[in-house]
Amino acid sequence: LYVAVRALAWLDIVPDVVNELGNKDTSVLGGSLSFFLVLFVNQTNSRFYSMYMDSMSVQKYIFDVASITATTFPRANALRIIRYLNAGHVAGYTGLSKTYTKSSFFDEMNTRLKLLSAKEMIRIENLHMDHGSDAAREIFTWCMKEVEVALEKGFVDARTASTLREKVLSVEEHMDNLYAFTDQPTHFYYIHFLCLISALYLPLFALSNAYAAGFGGEMHFWTDVILGLIVLLQAFFCHWTSIVGTANGGSIRR
Image 1 (tube, rainbow, N blue to C red):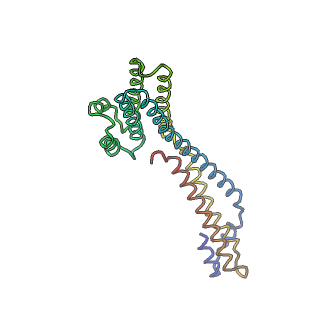
Image 2: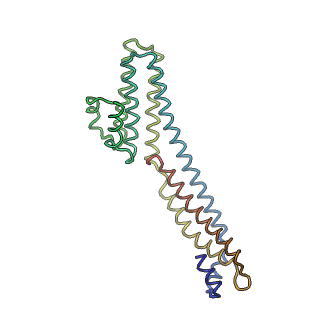
Image 3: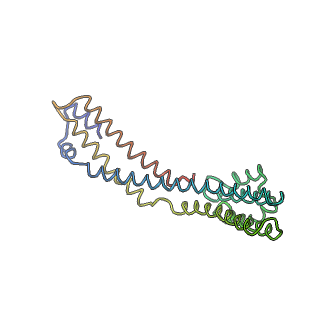
């Protein structure tokens, strides 16, 4: 719109309607749009950061359990609970989105790292790993049972067993938090409201700046260039801010 109006201005063909539209004040609408866009991106960035921290916390607690069991459990028992935790971790991401599937992700990791035996795989076969966290939760339950076995056999005392339970449950909790974010994405209405406001505001902003560049004897080439860059930057700001916010809001699915 800006380029078209300015081209008509240089050709001295300017409809009167352009003067009427360009003479309107779009600053209030532009300020409101900028406010909502920045608020939207801030909220999605907060979601992204929370999801990232949950993901990193899972790794931390798995490492904590590995450190404790490696120094207290018999080697076979320690390796088994660590295998289960890593398997639950991988299974959790498998059920989180379509990005990681059982065949392309979990099975590949299981073949490479020997996380679960064939018999153990049969136990979770009917839990549909690609469709939710049931398989991961079942595997985390096996970890809890391993802690109970270790306590009964005297490998650890009650205090250490309690610490291990808390850390295993923390792994499950932070994986569940990722599922909670996935189940409640950024509000549909919020995103489309911003798209609607942007679609209404940007044409008016372009016309306003096209008119502000002047007509007739008021026209200057560099004025057209500078105001054109302002229109272009505003369009990029609205467009890419929306893209960044939408991408961050659903980042865990990617």
